[in-house]
Image 1 (tube, helix red, strand yellow):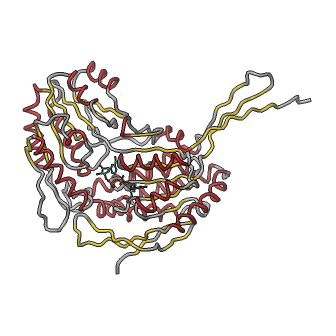
Image 2 (cartoon, rainbow, N blue to C red):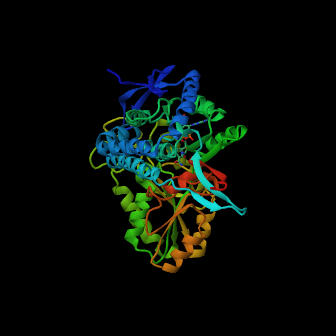
Image 3 (spheres, protein in one colour):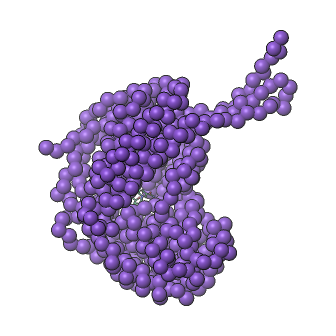
Length: 483
Ligand code: NDP
């Protein structure tokens, strides 16, 4: 029997106006389930319930918040093998990455459980006699969370956990490509002692329910991760109501390989940064900026390493690269191969559709060489297992190439030189930077975000998340004479 999953609204599970099918991208004959699509009146019901519940949550002692968040985090960690398999089945990332993502999602909740106990504000003496000042953070209110499919559980968790920790109510609209992971997380959250309506799952398409959500004057803040065009549309809608926004969008991350780099470290970083998660990461190293003195040796090893990567069904043992998440994304990936070739880049390996025992969206990971930074393959976010090598003659050329982009999420350099690494760290225009490490792979207790078209608004993760999920209140208190 086909599994049917519902939305979680005002503390109850609700069937939708209609349902969508969710299929496994590694094997499109595998129907994972049918998922409810919320209607407009359900969205309104959720918004009203969230408003009422938020008042109760904000006035609840922080021990209750701590216990709820800890409970969610511990259950995710305990069930990471089972839920990781579900995630990999619907998203297509290899099983180890799926399990790792659930584990990491759990860590976001346990981290923010502890943050609930660290809500210490500031105080000051007034410039006037006999007056004290108390500065404290208060919840922002009702938060809309709109998350993508590439990290369906982790991205949602690094938004949901701080939103709850800082006393807010939530309407979560996950990506329709990965609803099973969303329902699994919602089921875990629903078990906790939260006011009815504090947390709501509203599945539906971005263009319909997502758009209505971001246009609603009943929403106080919107945290979004996804593409640049959708992010800009959300910003335009939000400004009508002066809704606070935080947007994490596209990127075009570069990894620099200098002439003094350790070749093995450079190739390992490039392979994992470019092809991890099938290249469907906002932190993917899609531009490899390589010094001419090491270029040929690097490219030879990179191509050998790329051709050795095992593409296959996400749940098969040994698979290193799974399928693209959807037919649409797959078509876009193949199209970028044609674009690269037509622009004059040299396709050294991969880029072709692969036949597997099961019908899925499989492509051989690709390496382009002789590419320039004006080509579309080096300017647009492809979200594909495609790495483009750019040859440069000096460190100055390298950093100029890295900074020549509209984006600015992550960047990296592989070098033995402390001087170059330091100069790079301090002069590259990205929100995150790595030295002798892949551009992908970040921690959960420190800020994450970028510059330019990559991010808008305050940082996510770590204690910096308080900036978005709270608003500051400054109180002046004249205590009077004790006599
Ligand atoms: P989108 O930006 O379309 O989707 C991200 C989220 O926004 C989804 O939940 C989506 O819903 C929702 N959404 C879409 N339209 C609206 C809207 N008008 N109002 C409110 N919410 C909306 O990305 P895609 O999934 O289409 O991916 C396309 C490309 O975007 C990728 O190839 C990649 O380049 C980039 N991307 C980048 C990510 C990153 O982390 N940097 C993450 C995801 C995508 P739904 O999908 O259910 O319709």
